[in-house]
Image (cartoon, rainbow, N blue to C red; front, side, top):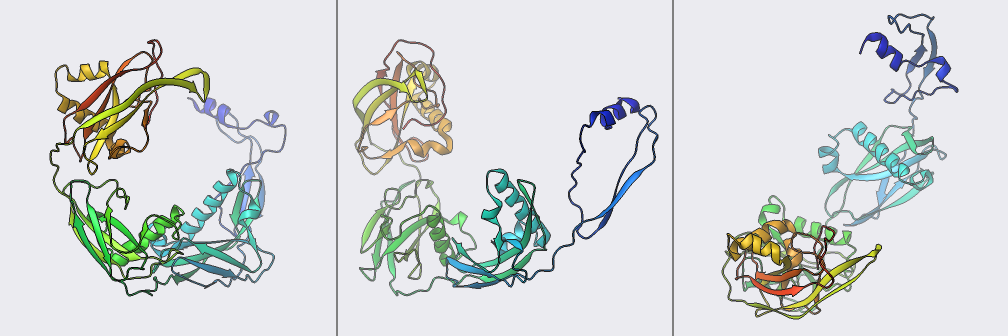
Length: 451
């Protein structure tokens, strides 16, 4: 592109501008004098062909405002930020950030944190939020919840003004106040004996014996590789905050136990992704009905076993095929297979899925069932545990997708498949033939898992 072509393309032409043209600029410094200027340019050679028109302006200076930040009612998981700004009419933002995030995510720099916070506010406004919901005015008491016990934080505040419909800008520098949440107060001297039983490659039982039968307690299992450098108390407290994030009801949750209990790592504790030959630590600690830890943390080590072959067998009952209208497309039918897998052992994982007879025969034409099961495990990836079960399901399973994530096709022969799973197949492949309803035709494709 020649200079004249570039200038003809990029320069503004007077007869193309019907109204006053606005040129937004950002990253200007506060309280600074600037000069805006404009002049005509000859597109043939790039020389100026008018006098320079200029306008001098000064950006607003940041306000000198003291928010008088303080905290009150601090507990292990909550607290209050108090503000009482020296200008009662100023609008401002209040927030908080961990000291660790301030250092690691924002480089320990106030301006970086401020820019990020303003950007977050503007994103919120662009997505339908309102300035009035964000901005504070006058003396305020703002609740903090979901805090982590025994953790350093900064309370932050800065002035904001609305600019156009969906943006704000800061009118003061960032002000911050350091505070640290207290740890949980141990109010119960109960201790816990911990023993492991029936250790398998991906499962084990935990027997907990509390020194006080009426103490309510919670059990967690963590891989040692994920907790290096942390104390048992830190790990327990982080787990409490994690559960709070999912709105656990500490008063009624089935994850709270009393008395001596033998708990299964999956069905009772919820550890669904244990791996073979891996070191884990079990954490047990008392909890009150409001979600506060009441005891010291007891721990025990355990290592899962190597993968072992199993003599478990799996059969299928109640096998039926059916179809139904698609809830999103009246003219489309969805095809499914109902069945109930029946394993001979209730304490071993097994995988269940569907495969078309054509795919199965193709994959085993020059291979074996063992290679086919390895292929299924590889296709499932990290999601394999979504299709793994313990014992006989309480209700029939409804399969709508094959193991690759394809929707079942009408009038097509499939195999229901199952095999023991502990990181890899532990049993032979068990299968039963079933043909879907309808007349054979090309079906759609979906992604996901069928149960």
